[in-house]
Image (cartoon, rainbow, N blue to C red; front, top):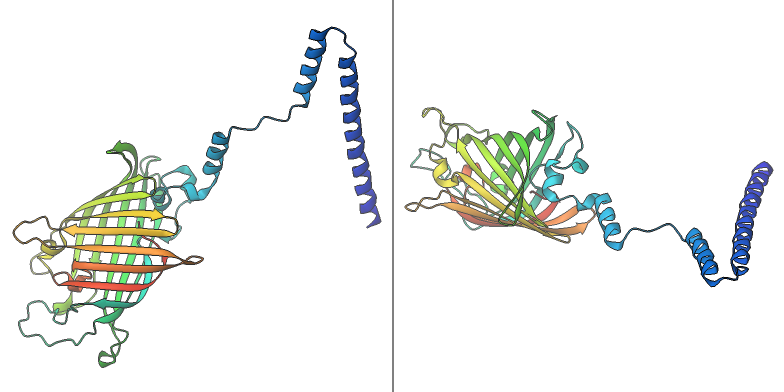
Length: 341
C-alpha cells in the first residue's frame, strides 16, 4: 500500500512539474513578444503564440452529428437490421433472429367463428367454437450462407408457427383448434435504387410451404414461390410480394381453390414513430367477378423493456389455413416481444 502511495505521489509530482514547466515556457514567450518594439513584428509574435496555444480543432456540429449517427446501432434502418443489408448490420451465419412478429394474444374475439370447416361434406356438425380464444405466434429465421454468389446475396431459412387456442371453451376441453406451420427458404439480394421517392433495399426470392398438419377433411396445405421487393424511406417501409402456387395433383390437393381466396400476393406497409409501430397487410385476388381478400392492421407500443403491447385487427378471408375460405372479423389484444417487418 505504501509503495502504491509513493508511486502515485511520484507521478503527481512529475505531472505538476510538467504543468509548471509549460506555464513557465508560455510566460517566457509572452515576455519575449512584449519586448519587441516594432508593432508588426510584435503582433506576429503574439499570433504565433496564440496558434501554439490553440486547442485541437473540433469537427463542425453537422459532422459531429453524422459521426454520432454512424456510431449508433439504433440508426440502422429497419429493413437493414432485419436482413443485415449493410456492413454495420451483419451478424454472421446461424444466428436465430426474429422473422415475422412474435406475440401472444390472450384475448381474440371473432364475429363469425368457423364452426363448419370440413371440406366436401354437406352435413357438418357444429364444432361449438367460442368467439373468444387466444392466438400465439412464434417466428424466427437464420442466415444459412453469407455471400452465396457474391457479397450481395445471402441465403436465409425461416420458420413461423401460429396457433389458435380455444382457451376458454370447457365444452371442447380448451383445445388448440388450429396450428399453421410455415417453413421457408429465401435468397436475399441487396439493392440500392430510388423509385417514386422510396429506396429499394432488397429483392427476396423465396420458397414457402404452409400446412396445418391435419388429416381428412380438415387438412390444408400449399407451396409457393415468391419474389418480395423491399422499400424504405425514413421510418416507413413497404414490402410487395407476388407469389405463384406450385401445382399439386388434383387427388392430393386439399384446397384447390385457395388462390381464389388468398390471392396471388400481399403488400405490407409499416410506419414507426417513437415507441409505436403501425402496419397494414393487404391481400386480394384481383378478380372483379368474385373479389375476395383480407386486411390486417397491427399496432405495437412500448410497455416495459423488450415487452410491448400488441393489438391486431383482421377482416376478410384466410386468417388461418382452416379458415382460408371463411370470412370473419377479429380483434386481439396482448403482448409481443418483436415486431414483424
